[in-house]
Length: 511
Ligand code: KIV
Ligand code: ZN
Image 1 (cartoon, rainbow, N blue to C red):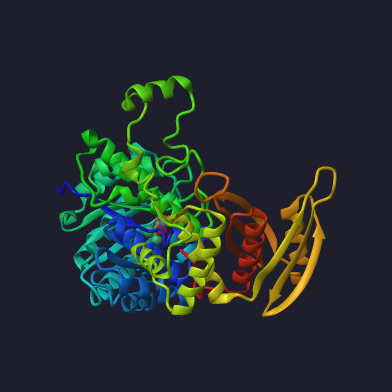
Image 2 (image 1 turned 90 degrees about the vertical axis):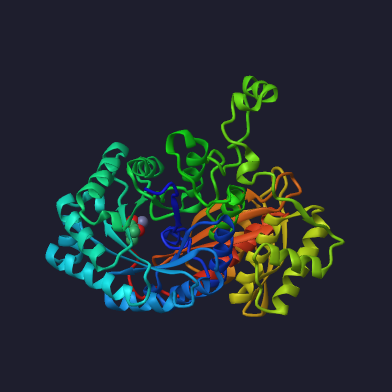
C-alpha cells in the first residue's frame, strides 16, 4: 500500500454545483492555475457534456495545466464519455471520471434501470473511456446506500474493463465515520482484483461529517480523497481540502501519509475561490477562516505568547496566512503590474484588458496605499466580468445618509451604453441604491443574499460585496469591490444582473 494520498480537487465541478457558484472559462483557468500551484494531483474541471460552456472550460483548463491531471466528469453514457474525451484531449495528463448510481432507490426511481442494466452500462462506459485515456475513474453514485454485494460485482467488472480508480461516494452525506471506514475496508477486501485500482472517497457534508468520513476511509485504506476548496459543493458542500490536508499533516502520527500539497498556497486558493464564486468563508472556518488563528481569551493569548504550541497545533504561516505580501503601490508601473499578474497566474487575453485592469489598479492605489494580491484578484474578477458582458454598468453614485433622515441614493448607470439617471430612498444607503437600480432595470429578480467582506484588513481596505439574485429558477452571484461599500454594493448588484441576462442554460441536468 502506498504511503501517498492522492488529492483530487472537485471545486470546479461539484463545487460549481453550489447555487450561484458557476464559473466562467477564464475563472476556471485562474482557479486551475492556483490548484496547480497548490500541487493537487487531480483537478476535476467540470462536466463537459452539460453545456458547450462547460466543455470549453474543461478544454481550456486541460490545455494550460501541466503539473496536475485534468479530469472531466461523464455519466455512463456514450455522448458524455465522448465529449469528455474530446475536452481532455489536450491535457498532458487527462482523466475521464464516469459514474452511475448503484443504490436501489437511484436505480429504480431515477434511472429506471435494473441492476443488470446498470452493470452493463458501467462496463461499457469504462471500456469506451479507456479508448480515450488510460486514466479512467469509475464512481458508484450513492454508494453508501447501495447493496455492498452488488457494488462488489460492479467494481470487479469495471476494474476488469480498465478503471484505475474506484470512487465510493457518499452522495447524500448519510455516512457515519466508523461505518464508512468499514465499507471501504470490506470492498477492498472482497473485490478480487481490488489491488489493480486505487480506492477513492467523495463525501458530502449534509450531517457535517464529510471530513471525518473521508479520514475514516483513509484509515481503512482509501488512497484518494475527493474534496473542494472551502468545502464548496452541492447542498451542504463536500469535504474541505484544507481540512483534510492539514489533518494529515498535523496528525502524521495517526495517518503516516504524505500528500504533494504545498500547504502555503492554501489561503490564496481559499481567497481566490471565495472571490470568484462569491461564497464568503465563515470567520470560524477551520484553517482558512479569519479567526482560525486568532486568540481572544486572555489565558490563551498569554499562553501563546509564552509558548506558541500551548494553544496552536498548526502554524498560520504554514497554510499561507500573512503571505499576502505588499506587492505594488501607487508608483508601480504597468510592467510591474503585468509581471505580478503573470506571477499570480492571471492571463488577460488582450492589451485592452490589461490596460483596463491597470487603470483600476491605479485608481485603487490612489485611495488605498497598500495593494495586496487579494486586491489584484478582486480588480481582475470585476474587470473580466465587465469585459465579457457589461450591459449594465455603474457610471457614478452619490449616497446620502444622516441620522434622523431617510437615506438616499442617486446613480447614473449605463444600460447598453446609454446613460440614465435614477434615484431612490431606502432603509439604508445600500437599499436605496438597489431600489434606484431597479427603478430603471425592473429585472424582476429576487435578492437572495447580500454580504460584505473586507478583502484585506483595516478600514481603508476594499469592501467586497456579494449579491445573489434569482429569477425563473436561475441563481447568480454578482461581485463588486471598492473602498466605498455602497459603490461596491451597486457594482455587485449590476454584475449579478449582467450574469442573470448572460448565463446560458445547461443542456443536460446536473449531477
Ligand atoms: O456526490 C456524488 O456522488 C458525485 C459523483 C458524481 C462522484 O458527485
Ligand atoms: Zn458529489
